[in-house]
Amino acid sequence: MLVGPPGTGKTFTASVLASELGYPLFQVRLDAVITKFMGESSAKLRQVFDAISEVRGVYFFDEFDALGSQRTTPNDVGEARRILNSFLQMIEQDDSNSVIVCATNHAEILDYALFRRFDDVIQYQLPEKDEIITLLKNRLQPYVIKRFPWSKLATQAAGLSSAEIILAAEDAIKELQLLIHEHKTISSNIIELAINDRREMSYQKHR
Ligand SMILES: Nc1ncnc2c1ncn2[C@@H]1O[C@H](COP(=O)(O)OP(=O)(O)OP(=O)(O)O)[C@@H](O)[C@H]1O
Ligand SMILES: [Mg+2]
Image: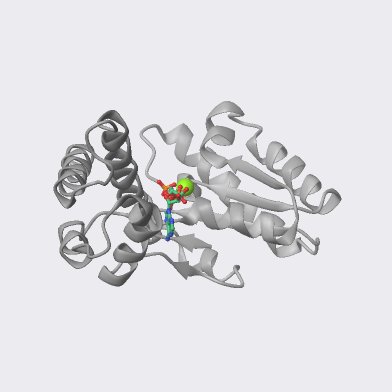
């Protein structure tokens, strides 16, 4: 069970795990199963677990919190609870060679009983300063001069997710490509602006 805020690498982890193991990756959207197969979602889940034992792979249940969330209609609550109970039963009986990975942004709404069923619960956090520096350097090192204010930029980017930091770095690279005839390197100024833009978008998204 992978738990943490958006953009911290949960989905990324599932895909890296699959490619390291050389297993196919199957993504299951539980929220879609619940809404699309109203009344028969448990049967659909059964089919997924049949596949889990028949075809070895990494099975990634994203948006796992859909099972525990407060739904608006009583009908939905019933359906989510039914599928949660089915899931718990099926995961307990599972003795397949597949790897089951679940991910959620909302640990608090998931019942403790659920966590108990997982071999591991891994918490994902927003990146610390040294991690931000690594993320920025990974993307931007080829485009900047030797002595570069990485530390200052990392402070600027504090509070953004890994995904947002990578996007900011890519924005800055695009900016450079637009100016390619005038400049060969990215100035810290451009990166700073890209970081601030991402922060602005992040505020708007979470308001
Ligand atoms: N810890 C990390 N290290 C390096 N890159 C990362 C990390 N976390 C995220 N990324 C980058 O950000 C992208 C998006 O992250 P990902 O989709 O894994 O986030 P998530 O935790 O699944 O978010 P959500 O909760 O919104 O689904 C990844 O494909 C990867 O490029
Ligand atoms: Mg994800």
